[in-house]
Length: 325
Image (cartoon, rainbow, N blue to C red; front, side, top):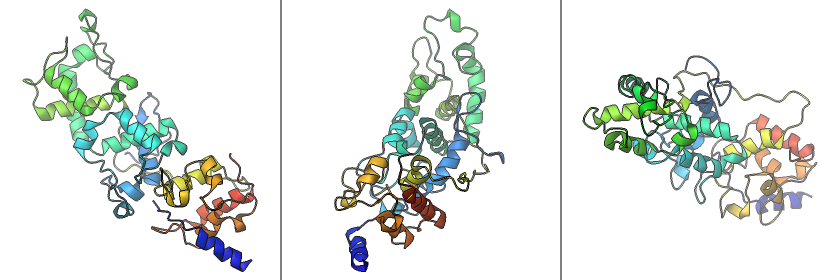
């Protein structure tokens, strides 16, 4: 038995990488229908800082081990060149052959949008948004309306209806650079604002336009602690176990060629195991490699080990039958 145990340890050659206003975020969508960057900040702190860093500069504790390096969300040029929809696809589906895992397995679509807009806001200054609001009200509201719905006082007299900036589908498919080009060059019946607004002012207006899609996070927001399971309730794979793997493991164990063919991205792949052997034996955590290796601290190989609570969650889930729940 001892020989088998050490054979399993050797065979399992895993390389897992660990990878406001004093109010708690209550959900990814606010009461007025916008996405909550404050809720996104909570999720970002739980899942993203290990690679992207606390300030979003791509300098998290595992960043040096990754190639290519994690994105720097404070980079204006990077943000302005992509549409929110493109950013959503990256978060949702991951990027093959990089350390970016597919978060769609662990987060809902609303949660992904909330995280996305928190990351988006890291390249924004609140002063720019406030200045953009003043410019918008003085120059743009007459067509686009006080709250950006395209229902300004002269909107009905125009041959083409003004854009509705509260339409998330419309805004999510426009990059900041797209919006800047329209403001600069005009688009019938909208005039060019290049002569009336300097470049900084045009970018400030765009910063304000984005606030119709999300409620900005406020510095000093209190991050909500993850909710603990009630005593006696068995772990859920989707809610309790998979988030552990997503946050700590899939930066290596995802994509086309993960170590030993092991992908920890969803239930099917976890139960499939590696190219050589399964890592889960339902009902028998002491014989399951994923529990053995995390329990003795061999995994994650880089970064901090899993907490006792996380290890116990994996143990309890396997002991309960390793269900897809």
